[in-house]
Image 1 (spheres, rainbow, N blue to C red):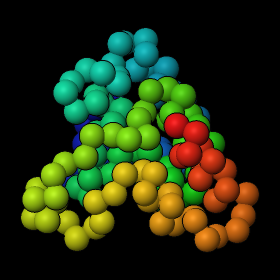
Image 2 (cartoon, rainbow, N blue to C red; image 1 turned 60 degrees about the vertical axis):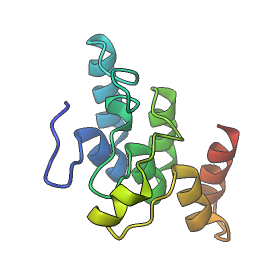
Image 3 (tube, helix red, strand yellow; image 1 turned 180 degrees about the vertical axis):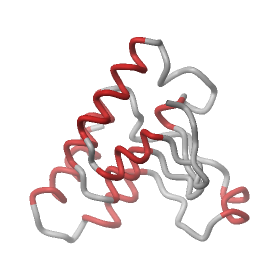
Amino acid sequence: IMIKDGNKQTILHCAARAGNLRLLEFIFSRCHENNIGKNTDRLGGFFNWTDHWFRSPVHWGILNGHVDALRVLLANGCMLTPPMPSSQKTNRRTSALLESPQELALRLYKDKPGDAAEEILLICQAC
């Protein structure tokens, strides 16, 4: 469950990116059964690990417009405001914007009509 690929993504990143609810629920059930998760280290734990682009599973759920996946992630302990690295560290590794999931949602969906966009913005504002 805690293995990372070449882009430093875990299975949780992949499930969130794909919007695979069944896989997300399976991962969280195993994590909760084995006490793995949200507060196991100083960086917010496994649920909030970031990848090569400094994106957490929540970032990927928002980026791909997976409203239900976003709800599952947040209900199981993922953070809408995960710890962010310093900009000095990010400039050396990627050209992607360093932004919180909330900032990403505003950038992507602020002026876009549609139910998914509106729901994602409401979820981000509520937390």
